[in-house]
Image: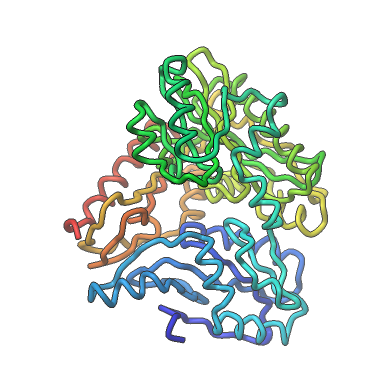
Length: 464
């Protein structure tokens, strides 16, 4: 138990359990996983969440916190330290953890299978080698293969519009290639490693110094594309059930800072309906190409839209998106009562290779011009240098409840979610917290989002 930072798990032999493995930012999705599985088992169902977030307190039952790096740094700093670790390392830690394995074995004594759902399926998660443990999500080997930018552009070329690009191997070849292309691609050159997310491992370069200072690995394969001037960074969330069936949830506008760093999203998109329809069709095309190759589950596509209204594909993420919770909350209030939600669609896609019979038509045209009265926005405060917090920010209601209140005609508002707590050292790349704002108008939603951002920043005491 020395590598367990916190746990409050208490097993009940009469309860059907499911594991969640990931970060607290996706904890809210447990409600929808619980709802999806609960419809298909007659037993009381509970989810055990195995997370890496080091917080002041955990106001939930059935939590296991594993983060050896944060634990070690906390001993050195003589203070509680909150820091993110890569999902690949976290998956290894969880898979090897004796307490997790013992808990899984105990659960399997009273149920035939133990489902595990993850925000992102990873091959490094090997707990599924225990007989009876099943991953409720995309195949991890396929997800890893398809999350490769080089594979994506080579596969999707000719099917959807993509920017000009080239591939190179090693820092020397990268420097030579970008120097040759820079006069022609004068607006900038986007450089990315094969695998990158949320701005990690990628950069919009304006000079050769940007390239040589950031990318130094002579063994790395790099993806190089023309940076295109654009006004919008939309993202589209979808689910693949097979090579023909793709459910598109909708289009949200991303907040991108410093060229490629994701900080949040807003919905409905402000884009013209025609452009949104194009984006949804391009996403459906990507989904069919993934489905044809065996992918099943949730995925997302990021695009840009140029000033003249032309959309271009940027990347596909073979995992849950940062907008998944908000789309789930919106869909349950905008779709007919009893409609399956995204996690139930994924459950059917993974376990039955199809969607449930009562799956509605994709609601992707729920934009402002079509009368959508539910506006939401998010902001992720990911610190770029070490800070120490002054106080915690507590919430009196859940995100799902806020959506329900706004959708039923009540007042909107904002929430601060997953705040790390009081007197915590927060390391670079770690979430201080997230803001979610919901209202019946875009103007009020944006104002509530701004208020939440300011409230979150007031919880910072000083640099650490």
